Length: 152
Ligand SMILES: Nc1nc2c(c(=O)[nH]1)N[C@H]1C(S)=C(S)[C@@H](COP(=O)(O)O)O[C@H]1N2
Ligand SMILES: [Mo]
View 1 (cartoon, rainbow, N blue to C red):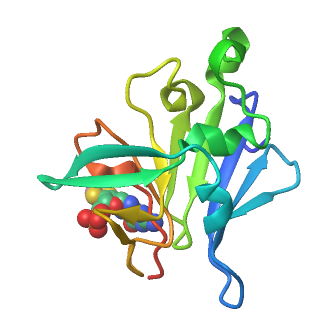
View 2: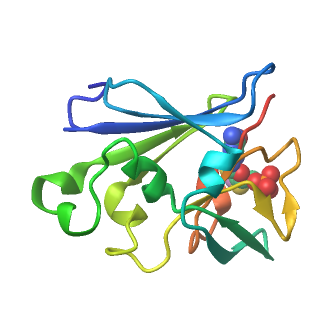
């Protein structure tokens, strides 16, 4: 546990290894990381959402972030209740930018519009600045948690 206030830390690390297929690594607490490349993410149920950033609407598709976290045992739906409501997902990008989501705001059974992990917006793959993967967060007034892969 990295933070004494938290019963569980779920960490989604976005990382690109030069010689390998781009993938994201997801880890629950200090468990073993599980990696997802583009085909693995595409194999999960896909959702398309429209969201606004800097006054422009984008349409992006991909799995719900919670469905990726489900693969390492994150509770959602009926299982997300009581003591689980302080569980968080930490997301880290290659530039070490970090954001946090509570599981409750990732779960479509709890929240109206929930974040996806996308590899393509407006019908095109993300470019090198934003991609290969980006979390799109509907309903945010600033896209500060639209965490993208970036190399500064
Ligand atoms: N990896 C990473 N993601 C990030 C950031 C960052 O510095 N690094 N900045 C955030 C902030 S504060 C904003 S406003 C948006 C900016 O996205 P844009 O470059 O597509 O406008 O990306 C967010 N995602
Ligand atoms: Mo920002």
